[in-house]
Amino acid sequence: DGGITQSPKYLFRKEGQNVTLSCEQNLNHDAMYWYRQDPGQGLRLIYYSQIVNDFQKGDIAEGYSVSREKKESFPLTVTSAQKNPTAFYLCASSMMGGSNQPQHFGDGTRLSIL
Amino acid sequence: ILNVEQSPQSLHVQEGDSTNFTCSFPSSNFYALHWYRWETAKSPEALFVMTLNGDEKKKGRISATLNTKEGYSYLYIKGSQPEDSATYLCAFTTSGTYKYIFGTGTRLKVLA
Image (cartoon, rainbow over all chains, first blue to last red):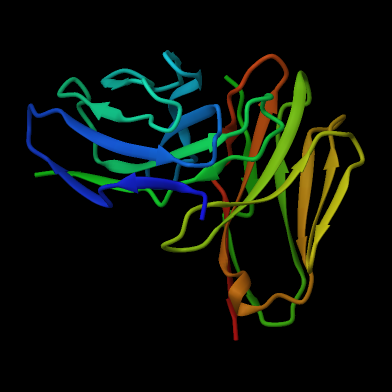
């Protein structure tokens, strides 16, 4: 079955620690996205990537970093510079061709601070 | 800053009732409007993508309409069932960008 796999489902971060959230897709999609959800807010875009080795900042990129070394993988690192990392993180992908393509989502990772 | 508004924020309906929600978006530089259903403990699932003014899409008991000139879309559910309980998200995209701008969603609870 094609889909998007996010891991882990739950993640805990200590103060000053970097953590990496995994996102893998086997849909052969070119575009991948990371979103953050906070209570009472819509999904906010952190980073997106249209092709391998290229990515762009979204609306709330500060304190986060990404890489896109392979088409199927788009890991997100939450750095110690992100002062309020507690949130639900969703990864998504879509076919190349622009934003009239539906996005496919993973099940999400919930990050909490210890 | 582009903003997408959804209303109501939440609602409860009885099984068998029909209901509808609204998604409002900026009418300039419109490219596409997306609807997603997000059930608890699952990932969001695409329902519709609409691009043309006057578009109407239907999937079973769920349908959607689009008015790009005034910047709104309606999602209708006919004869709501408990399995329709979910959060319904809309997302707006503009021409020349690959960004999807999401609303906060409408949380629907269908009571048996």
